[in-house]
View 1 (tube, rainbow, N blue to C red):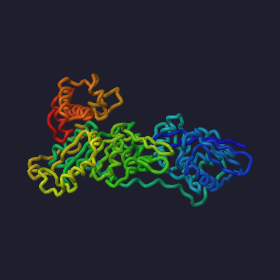
View 2 (view 1 turned 60 degrees about the vertical axis):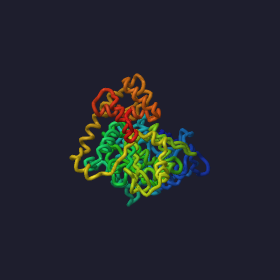
View 3 (view 1 turned 180 degrees about the vertical axis):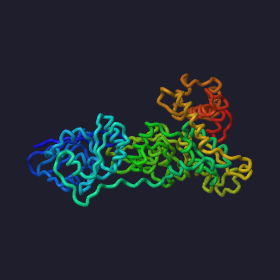
View 4 (view 1 turned 135 degrees about the horizontal axis):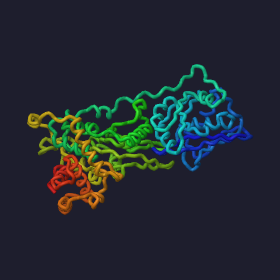
Length: 517
C-alpha cells in the first residue's frame, strides 16, 4: 500500500483554488476511482492518465487506486489537473521523488502518448498558488512563458511525462519520434490592434464629438454616440483606446489573466499593457457578450474588455437580453455568472460606447426631410435602448453629418498623442485627489462621496445641480453622473474644483446638448 501527494490549481472564474491531490493504493481488484467533485473533463482524466503513464514506459500498477481532490467540497473542472493526477499516482506507486512532488504544483493536460498539452488560465492559476505560498511549478513547454510572468514562480517546462518521471528519479523512456506539443500560434491581429494604430487626426469636422471623446477618456465615462450613417461614430469609438493611459501593473496582471482564461493571450508579448478593445457584432448572443458555456461559464466580450473599451455598434440591433445584462457590470464593475455547477465571478470594469443611428433608415437628422421612417418606427427603434440603460451612460452626444463648410473652417485636427497627453494629466489629478480611496477615476466615485463633505463641492455648484433636478432634467443617478463629468472637466482644465460653467457643460454632454443648469 502507498500514498502519494502533490498539488494543482482549479479555477472558478479568475479565482484559483489550490487543490491537494492524494492518491492511495491498496490491495484488491484493479480499479481507478476519482473523488472530490470532479466534472466530466476531470473524470475522463483517468483514461488519459493511464494511457500516458503506459506510453512513458512505466507499468501501470495493478492495484485499487483512489484519488481524492481536496478540498472535496470544491467543484473541480478542466483538463489542467491531468499532470497532478499522474504524478500523485506514480508517487503512490513508489516514484522516488516524493519530496519534490509534494512541494510542487503541477499543471497540464496529458495526451495519450504522454505529451503535455497547454491549458488555459495558467497565469491566474500560478498567481493563486504563489499567493498561497507555493513557488515551484511544472507546466507544459507551451505554457512556460505565460507562467514565468508571475513574480516568485520557479517554473520547470516539461514536454513529456517521461521527462518528469526521470527528473523525479524514476525509470521512463520517451517514445521515439515524439516531440513536444508546440505553443499555439500568436492570435491574429484583432480590432484592438487596429484601434491602437488608429489616430484621432483622421477624424475631421467633429469638434463636439472629439471633445466628448476626450472627456470620456479623461474620466473613464461611458459614451453614447447618436448620428447618421457615415458621420464618424465608429471612427471616434475606435480611437478611444488610444487616448487611454497604459495599464498599471496590477491591472495589467488582471487583464492578462482574463485573456489567459479566454484563450486569447499571446504569452510571447508579455503582460497586456494597453487597454483592450472589444466590438462584438450585433448578432452576438448574451453568452458571447456576457460570458457563458456549459459547465463553468467562460468570459465574454464584456470581461475581455476589462479596463478597456466595449463598443456596441448599431446598439439598437443588439438583443434586448444582451443590453439589459450590461446593467450589473456598469454599476458594479464585475459579472457574476450563476450555473447549476457553480458560479464564476469575472471583472468587467470597462468603458461602454454605444453607437446608433437615429432611426432604421438613419436619415432622421436635422429636419429629417429625407427620412422614410414613421414617427412610431423611430420611437420603437431607439426605444430598444431602455431608459435605465441610457441613464447609466454619462455622455450622450449627437454626431451630425460633416459638411464641406465645417471641413473648410476646421484646421488640422489634433493627433491622438496630443490629446492623450491632456488625458494623462487629468488622470494624474484624479489619482492625486482620490489617493487613499478605492477609486481611480471620476466615473468610479460614488455620488454620496461627491455630494458629501469629502468631495469638496462648492455651494453654487450644488445649487445648480439641485435646480436641474427641480426642472426634471436629471434623476438622482443623473445628478451624480453630471457631477462626475463636472469634476472631469475641471481636471482637464486644471482647476481644483468644478464651477457652474463645468456643470452647465456637463449637463449639455449628459443630455445631448440640453439647457444650462
